[in-house]
Image 1: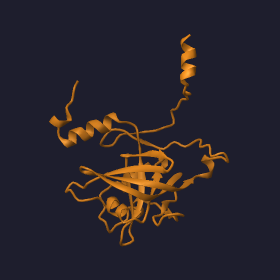
Image 2: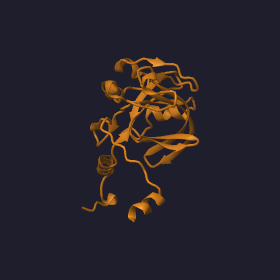
Image 3: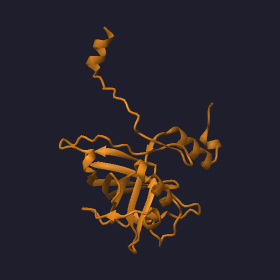
Image 4: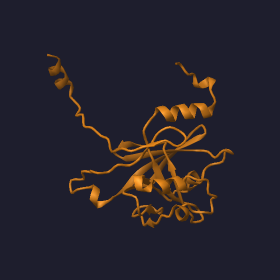
Length: 206
């Protein structure tokens, strides 16, 4: 089947894209409003895009009425933000935090979560998260009805049980986002396939 997005609605295109580009990691973002309210919201248009410097991107859409979401407003304030990774024991709390709470209400209380201080940014991290990335805002790029926030990672927080002295991470299984509106996946089913060099590939052909 050939599908021309110019002949489809934005809603149809969003559904198709998010059902095909899978799985996607979930950025569970903590940020602070200018009034001091801690906001918590999940976004699956998210990924790591640079290793030196360490860049991550979070793309945030608009509200149904076209206004910016609370997280987008907060990130523009320049107080930093934290990407907390979502693991299975936090799934229900993440779902609660995705509700459209008004700006003056923090999602932390309804989700039953506590924060812990960050070390490099003003926004706190989630105490229950197994891994969190403190980020400073690097750049904002407008992409139609979405806004792309590029963050520089300035601090990692990783649970002691997941990491050794050589920075090898094992036993970490964050959830992935699948299709809209509510499909997710686990990341425990894994396999290893080492890359080959061109020289190795040539040798295999003989």
